[in-house]
Image (cartoon, rainbow, N blue to C red):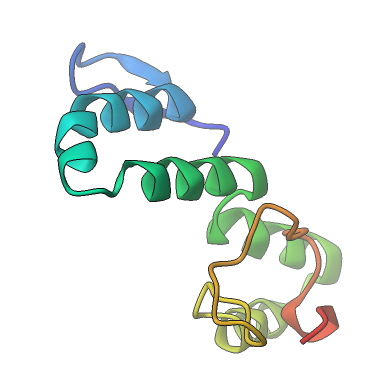
Length: 104
């Protein structure tokens, strides 16, 4: 989440976090009308805090130098949800920690 994206309003590169926040701001009225604004803001905060799957995969590969470890982690934790509660994983996840080492 440290890269740049083309900002849809300007057509110029901008920080990914800026583009994501601006997108949520753009659709905020519709999200509010449907009762989804709080959830989207919470999920965006969590995503920005923990990073995405690509970040986790790069961290695992850097640590292990093993593509098999990367794939196994993705297969074990592909749902994005806490297996014990079913809730969306929060910002506490360390992307460098493989799923096999996480508490269930």
